Image (cartoon, rainbow, N blue to C red):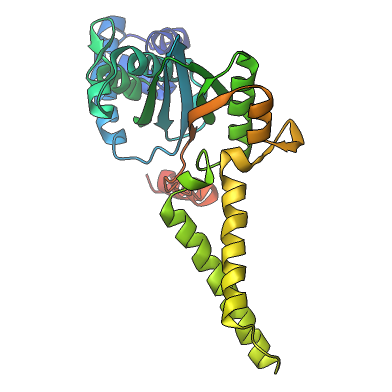
Length: 304
């Protein structure tokens, strides 16, 4: 049998980007034949892609693409933030954003079916990358803009992405608003557009607080607030919440003496719509006990 050298392992790893031990195993099985070892890895990594598909992807990146009045915001997820820094993974996200803008797919499934590179669909590129890296990846969501107005985007690192549709002569205003949204995270453009379920949740929280205050007053032998006063408290809490979470009512991060609405009026600019993605938002992340995992591996190696 041919001797498997470190140089051979390094060469195969450079070609395939597969883990070092997988490269050594493949070369051993192929008796030093580099071409055959690549084929073995291809088969093994394809299997790895299948196994990885069930694992939670709560890390990742947000990518943007703008060409004239067409733009896209895409969230692509991975299992770890380490992979989210991989150049091939970033290229996958950027390709996905471009395809959304250019091809206008109906949903994620349609996006994945689009041709991406070298005759492969985006899903085939994704699957090959899963096999190459050994970690699950998924395209979670996207938002496409097509407008006769203007578009601006802002990325805070790669984890928060914003796209804004606006009308106005000053391009910087759109960028400033996108940056503000990333910092202050409004849930709607105006108070009227805040989802009803969020308002009811805030009213419920305020009601619980009022009930707690009433119970404390009774326990202390003090008078309980009248129902009309409590109703005003609840409404005040809701109005305060609406001001905090609607973009136009928020204090501008670059000048807290102005609201966004006032700043836009001063700049003769109108914001028509915006979308903000935060990586992993709403995804339940797996929490690993690293010490326990290491201990388990050590125990397994002793028993082998």
